[in-house]
Every structure is written in C-alpha cells, then in structure tokens.
Image 1 (cartoon, rainbow, N blue to C red):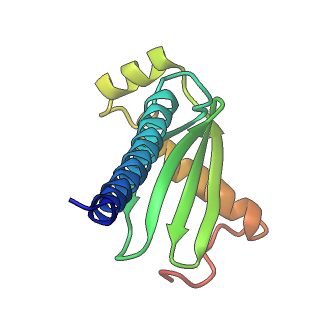
Image 2: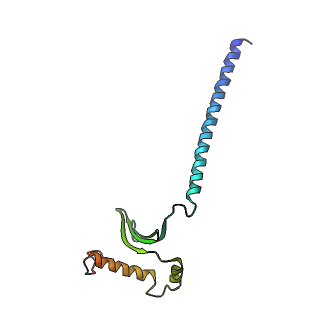
Image 3: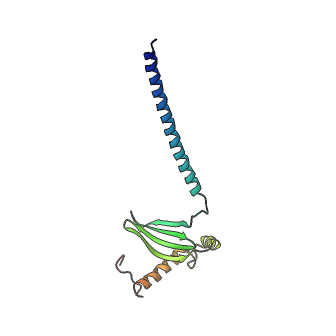
Length: 141
C-alpha cells in the first residue's frame, strides 16, 4: 500500500468523525432545550405560585360569544368575551368557600342562588348605566 492510499482513507475517517461529533452536539442541544421546556411546564403548574386568576364558570352565548366568571384576588369579574374583545359586565366580591358550599346545597332558594344574584346585579348595573330607567337600550327590546 502506498502512503497516498492511506492518506485518502484517513481523510474520509476524519470527515465521518467530524460529522458524528456535530450530530452528537446538535442532539445534546435539542435534548437540553426539551428538558428546559419540560421543567418550565412543571414549575409553572405548581399551585399557589403566581396563580391569582381562576375561572369560576363559563357559558356560551353564541358561536363566538361567551360569558365568563373569573376570580381575581377575592373578586369575581363577569366578563363578556367575543370576537371583538373582552368587556367587563359586572364585578362583585367573591363568596367565602364555606358560603359557596352552602349555596350549592340551597340552590332552590331564590335569595342565595347565583342566578338570582347575577340577575339582580345585572339589573342594578343596567339602572346605573342607563340613568335609572332600567330598560335595555336595544338588545332584546
């Protein structure tokens, strides 16, 4: 064998070794990125760490419209969510945990049910917004 033949085969092996090292480094970087993403997902899911927003309930009003009740730091916000944006419909203090358990038991009582309180709050909001006449301005009239 001549030295030229050995030199040509040696360069091929060196090229394969470089491709192998590059592929290994790339796989290592992708694995580190996936590990970081997994850790972030796990750490953000822990209760009590920055989660001050809680969806209490939601109801579809149409194909693109929803009514959502959200609890934020002890306050319930009733939000109208649609294709055009998000509007605050009403705001009220969140009931205590013991009171909300009692409300689910006494759901038949008109004074304590969520539907009755919500209807009362909407009528009060409508009176305040429309100058005290209590009539809605065009939707459903």
